[in-house]
Length: 444
Image (cartoon, rainbow, N blue to C red):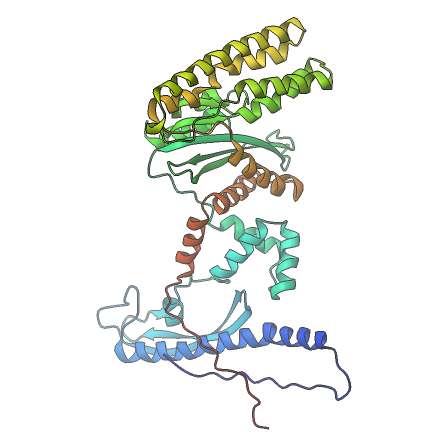
């Protein structure tokens, strides 16, 4: 179908001085509130006429036919109202009735692949989801109203996000190189019936593939690491999900997820950072805490060679092993020193994590694959999740917090998959072409 449409605007300008800003605001308002929805509604009704006439002539409609001898006749027009990012579109679509089976159908709904009672377009849903992922629901609805004249109430936006399937995370097709896990607290909605306070815990697991690309695994709200591990093991069907687990010193995290990987690597950044709290609990002064942190960072800071594994000489590998041995001895001395000074919690903290500090070097020596020794990528991701869940809003439901976290990690970790998901859902196949032919003054 190809046709030419004309949009007529009646412009009235005062003869004296006017404001360019007012002209821009008024023109934009008219086009957004009336022009775009009007054009879209007209295009839909024109296409509807074509589809209805074709169905009546050929007796064919997409989808399941009414009967073997289906013959369609035009019954009536029904008014429809659809929310889009171009505004609220009002139009009428035809209903057809089969002369034999007496079945009613709407050609436009079939051709546009709309649900029976669909009230919005998927492209508007995408805009709402991406806006809500950046700011609160209240600010998002005001933002949409300001920039696009899209009236979407806060409760409606919340319902759309809750019902959206855009947060579904795909299970990795191949074994991952690294698994990373972390958690954060958030203010949840209290539930007196279930004796739930306003303290919620969100846990996140992501992976890195062989090329170092992030792969989202999942998010869970108020689920223990035992429950998360059982779920991941069931999905992995008893196989190892990754070679390495990189994590901080959260109690129970490494021990529970260790069955999913070949080895566990303690995050070096967290190791140094969390020593400050352990020594603070031992009532160590600030200068002493900073001194021991600096000493610990110097001991564990073993860098892998930048050359390819095959290009590294055997002598260099031997020196690397000797450095690990020397670092272990220095850690033993540091633990003994902390015990002697009365910093028992700090000494226990280092001694417990010591056995998992240099696994990344041992793994490289065996396979030649360089594994990360910090969870810096996950930390940046957790900061973004914390900003949305903690600083922007509170009173989350457990399901809402986990869903919002999945949306965030999917947008950040797999931007290509996020774009492909919406491209498929929106049906962007290049079957629609609209060309702008210019602007000219119409005859009076």
